[in-house]
Image (cartoon, rainbow, N blue to C red; front, top):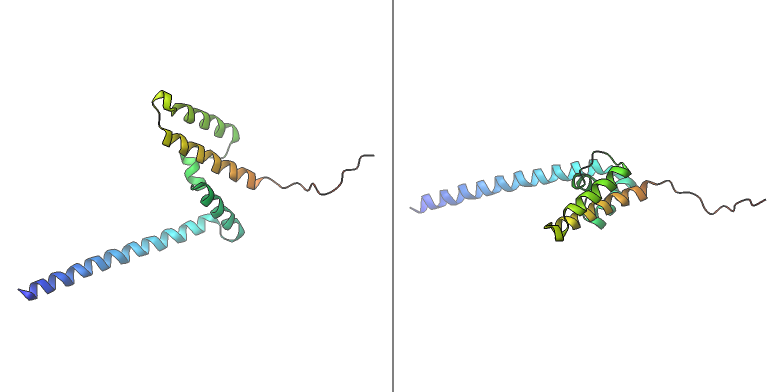
Length: 127
């Protein structure tokens, strides 16, 4: 009887060990893929900071607002439509509204960071 209990314990430990190893490999692969998508270097660090500040990646924000590319007019139209469709007074969800607002904020952050910085330190010639 003790022999069977020992075998059950050993088999159970092997199953748990394999599942843990598989989960660890998947997590490492997902982490490497995310790092590859972020671009690495300063660009990756900038994106990681923007993702952390809003809690969404750019891809997630685009999915929430149903966008395929970053077109300012389409972003605004989709944002307004989704926000109004989810109004609490119309039976909508405050949670969904907040996700829509966060998605818009994340996309706006991306636009602000990608705008070319103009050099305003040079004095203008007034003559």
